[in-house]
Image 1 (cartoon, rainbow, N blue to C red):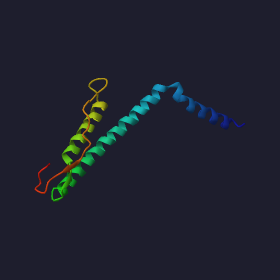
Image 2 (tube, rainbow, N blue to C red; image 1 turned 180 degrees about the horizontal axis):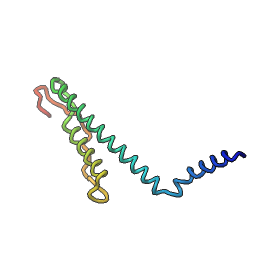
Image 3 (cartoon, rainbow, N blue to C red; image 1 turned 135 degrees about the horizontal axis):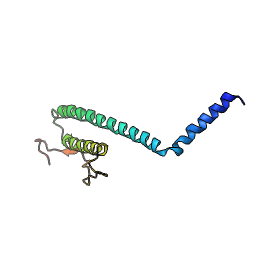
Length: 116
């Protein structure tokens, strides 16, 4: 076997064993990846918030009986954003929010625009 092949196999073996030998390094990398993914999620929530504002402006011109409840959606997105922020910068070990999300966004209105 050639010397470079043996060195290449040894390097591959070392790379395969590194996660088991140094789990804290892998955990740190996973934590950084999770942090980046959650930060991306917050940016996407910000975009969804802007899109919801635009959709609400268009919907306000409609005379339909059923309307999407944008206020509930904004409140829920704000709570999710706050939960992610609290996780990324915790004030204590395990942030908890015992209140459930509303998750019902259909708003039935009578013909005169009043909510029933």
